[in-house]
Length: 512
Image (cartoon, rainbow, N blue to C red; front, side, top):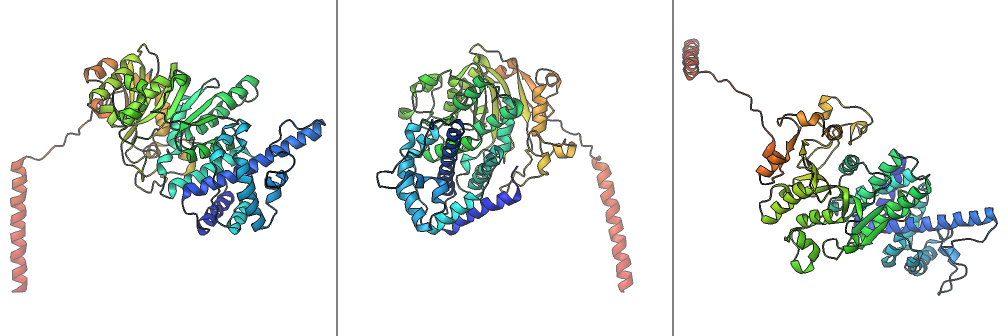
C-alpha cells in the first residue's frame, strides 16, 4: 500500500508532464519507464562495484563500459547518479544524444527489458521538463519491492482514469480473483497471450510470494521464478516495455515478455507449453482468414477473435493445465456452428470447471459488454461432471461510469482483511465467490438453482445444446401476489365515491 505522500509525488510528476506539453497518458508512463530503467541500471552497476570492492575481485558484469562512447562522452556521465547533477541543458544533451542511443545497444544484455528498449524514443520536449521530472523521480524511494510495484500500478491506474487506453486495464480486483481461483503453484509455467501491462503475471507473482514465502530461498525454484515461470505476448511495443518494467519493479528479474500476434503467428513451439493461462484478451471483432493461424482454424473455423482466443488457450496448455479467462457473454450462448463446437469441446473433450458471470458494468467506462470468467482444465479426455455457475451481482465498486468504491478499503477485493456482513456481501460478492468455489465438489452440489451459485450436471448442459449462459439454468422464484377480488374493489370505489359526494355537499353548504 502506498502512502498519501508518495501518491502526491507521483501526482506531481504526472502534472509536470501535462504542464510541460505531454498530454497522452501512455506517452507519460513510457517516458517515466525509460527513466526508471536508467535509474535501475545505475543501481545494478553500483551493486556490482560494491561487490567487487568487498570481494577484492574485478567486476563480473559491467553495464556502463569504461571509457567513452563514439561521441566522446564518458560512459560514467550516462549514469543516473551522475547526470542528475548536471545543468538542465547538459542533462538534456546527455539523455537525448548519448543515453538513448546507448539504451538501444543494450539488446545483448539478454534481458527482455533491454530488448524492448531497442525501440526507445525520447520525447520529453525541453531541458526544464526533463530536469524537473528527474528531480521528482530521484525523490521517490525505489528500494522496497512492494513500494516500487505499487507505485507503478498507481501510475498504470492513471492511464485508465485519464480516459484513454482503458482497454489495457483489467480491474485489479478481478485479476486478483482469477489468480486466487487458480491458485498458482511454485512449479507452474504461466502465460498471458494478450498481456498488455502484465497485470495477470504480476498478480500471480505476488500471490506466489505471499503463499510460498520460501520460493526464493530454494535455488531451483528461484531460477524458475525469475527466468522460466512468466510468459506474456503482445503486439504493441509500448505495452511490452511497460509490461516488462511492471514485472521488473515487482521483483521478477527476466520474464519472457515478447512481441507476438497470438492469433496470427505459428506457435507450434508453444503448443502444450504452459500449466496455467490467465487472460482477458481483446475482443476486437473479426480477423481475416489470411492472417489467422491455420492451426487455430483447424480447431474452430471462425473469424471471431473471442472464439479463436479460447481455442488458442486450449492449445497452449499442457494436459492437466488450467485456465481462468474472461470471455464476452456471446461465447456462452452464440448460436453459430463455431460457437457450439467450441463449447462442446470445452465440455466433452476438456474439463469445464466453472462459469462466473460478471456484473455488466465491470469494464465501464470503456466497455459495457457483459462478460464471464471461464475456468477449465485441459485433459484431452473429458472429465466434466458438473459445471459450477456463480451469478456475481456486485464487485465492490459502483457499476456506473465512475466506478466508485462502495466499501472501505479493508472490505474490498476477493481477500479482504475484514470479514463482510450480509449487507456488505451485497456490495462485494468476490470473497463469497472464492469461498463457494472451494466447496464446488461438496456442499455446492446440493444448492438449488434459485441460489446465487449452483452446479449443473453435464447431461443437462448437453441437452441444452451446450449453452453455458447462467440464465439458461437459473430458476427464478416468483413471489405470489394476492389481489383483492374485483367485487371487493368495486365496493370500495363506490364507498369512496359516496364519501367524495358527501364532502362536496358539505363544502357547498359552508360556502353558501
